[in-house]
Length: 139
Image (tube, rainbow, N blue to C red; front, top):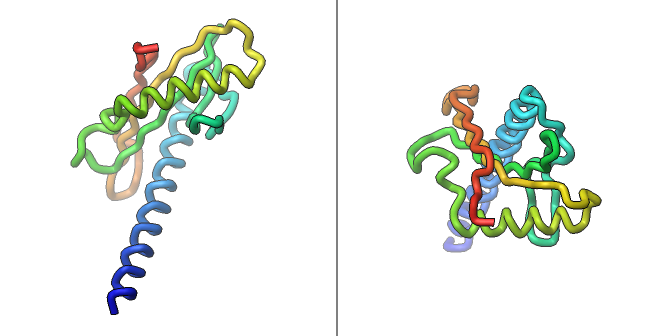
């Protein structure tokens, strides 16, 4: 009977992952529209490099902007932007540099932004969106 209990937990974790992935995709869609309305040209979404994934790659004027999108339905663990840990910041910087090395952008300036999205837990409508430009100053 232990195997059944373990299998039930695995299935529950897979459902939770699918739910989190869907929530993330919804947040990324909201963020892409938000950026486009503000004059950003979306170059790529879910860009993969050898060092990680970048949610949105956009251009604003002369800058390439790498955007990390964080979405939550509950503030139980704080606002979404707080989930960008030091490790995540380092991974974002490495991924951005890897992306720039494989694409033909020359000496283009770049930055990393974070978009924090809070959705209503009931109907998943947008409650709040915050855009932190040049959010990572360590590079």
